[in-house]
Image (cartoon, rainbow, N blue to C red; front, side):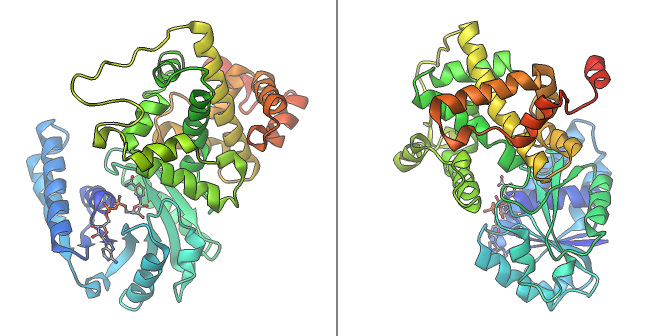
Length: 392
Ligand SMILES: NC(=O)c1ccc[n+]([C@@H]2O[C@H](COP(=O)([O-])OP(=O)(O)OC[C@H]3O[C@@H](n4cnc5c(N)ncnc54)[C@H](O)[C@@H]3O)[C@@H](O)[C@H]2O)c1
């Protein structure tokens, strides 16, 4: 099958590399020649690095590079079986694009979007044949991140999501099925990792370095929330939070923070601007955490309880299955374990007690416990069979 990709920026180039490595001819389109040239260079460089590490032969690299065909002409998509867009994150631009390309592709061609924050259903609605439309959400960098969220629109024909999952399996990816709800799985469930950490900082319970220490050293997360936000960039991270918050009709659970908004306003975008929560300028003193085990556990349990609550609610509202939720958070954001597994290990009554204590203290909707969690505690249930827990 020939794959068409529109937008050859960070994501489009990465997805093109994945598809070409899996043996597909890829037609890669961008509105600028410069972006196409950059994409080809980055694909070549990435694949040659793999060859140097012995993961691909030189011949396989050259063949994959040759399979990526740059184009500026939509007519080159006429023989594609799948056309996926990764252009700018703008509803009007994407809808206009799909209106244009639908007349140039074959009747069987599947149309897809890599959007992170727009409703798949609203994009499908721009098409004459919305039943062939689906969300295929890769993570950055696409060649390295295994997780891909597959999101059927309301109009998507039954069976298409499974066909796309099979294709992604063949590409060596780990696909999960997500309902078309704001943030899909990962960008929704991960929100408290940032939001609750900032809340702890705002309340003066601990500084950024201590919260990062608690989550990495005691929790096993690869990066602490502040180091991670600085790495992602506050422009990107704040906008995702804001978009999830507004898309959820202003549910206070997802409320963005003034602290992060001010960093953005100051131009303290994180690593890329030399300053965010931390100072990355040369000579800046390294941050020193307060290594207090009890404080660390309090911090970790509060952040974990909020993450688990979000995962439980996503399960309760059928955003994803139990197993897909676990895969999403371990493969999409590299959490040390799935949040539902973690909940079982901590004990659901303990998680619920942490949430209820927070709710009692603050009387904010932000801390309302998922009804699923409460019912499970009442019924003395766990997310996974207890034997599975014992064998882990
Ligand atoms: N960067 C991420 O971490 C990430 C992760 C997952 C999904 N996404 C989503 O993927 C999409 C692309 O993101 P990105 O980070 O690769 O952006 P990017 O800015 O790196 O690349 C976008 C590319 O699209 C091109 N483009 C814009 N409008 C176009 C049009 N009408 N026709 C053809 N080409 C056009 C631009 O020239 C540019 O090369 C967005 O929808 C974004 O939300 C991004």
